[in-house]
Length: 84
Image 1: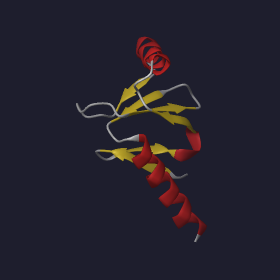
Image 2: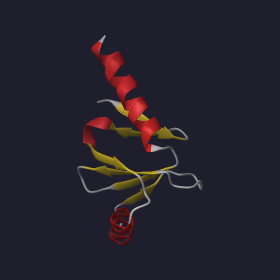
Image 3: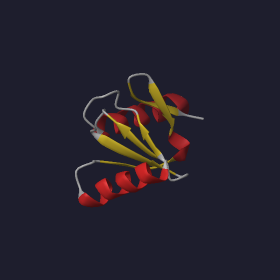
C-alpha cells in the first residue's frame, strides 16, 4: 500500500484514488455537497482553504489544502522510490 501525504500529516492510499481535481468547477462543488449530505466527505484541510478534491473508489471525497500539482508530485516521488 502506497500512501500519499495530502497535508498536515494526513495520508491517503494511492491505490484507492480515482481522481484528484481542483475544487473550482460547479460539478466538483456538486460532488462535494452530495458527499457531505451522504456522510462521505472527509475534510483534511485543517481549517485552511480547499485547493484539491480527492475522489476514492469507495465514493469518499477528501478535501485537501494542498494543490493538485503538489499531490501529483508526491505520488510520482512514491512511485519512483518504490521502483528502485
